[in-house]
Length: 240
Image 1 (cartoon, rainbow, N blue to C red):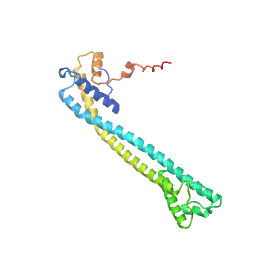
Image 2 (spheres, helix red, strand yellow):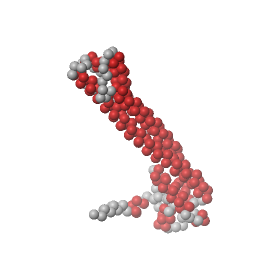
Image 3 (tube, rainbow, N blue to C red):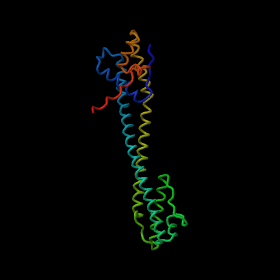
Image 4 (spheres, one colour):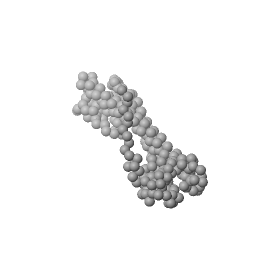
């Protein structure tokens, strides 16, 4: 008997279940290679399986989008922080402010350096230092800096924090969706094996080639199927 290749991926599981379902739907029940009970079980497994896969796909798309937004808002926040500190240092260089002004922002007084910011948490921390430091400096009689202002830095901080929280929520939803799908795999695998056993049993009188051909119509996969299908032809070049 040809060597079967049981599904190892979710795409392969879906193909096996869908193919069996479609074949049964287009075949008179008297000609089925599966039992009525298996067909009923197929419906009970296939619908939640499809739903779970769709939920995973949707959750992944939402996580990717949320991650892109979190990354972009973080980048913008870091730029605002860097530019604010650069403006501060330029004001000190021109003599508009004294080097001691850096202390308001928890920056080293003796040299003009923009701190390295490598994580969202560090960006949030420095944005708070700028907001607090600017408020304290103005309260002591200083003039507000601009381009960007502390308010603009704070707005960027809030946007980045909101985006990061949203990304975390979407990641949790994706992880949950994956867990729900993973919980269905053992039942799907056991059912597919049972289904394929029945299909091959009902074709036991066929030749190996005939068995393989007819079983494939019900979704059974065999080792070497890819080789038999041959290489994928190259795409047709566009007409000049």
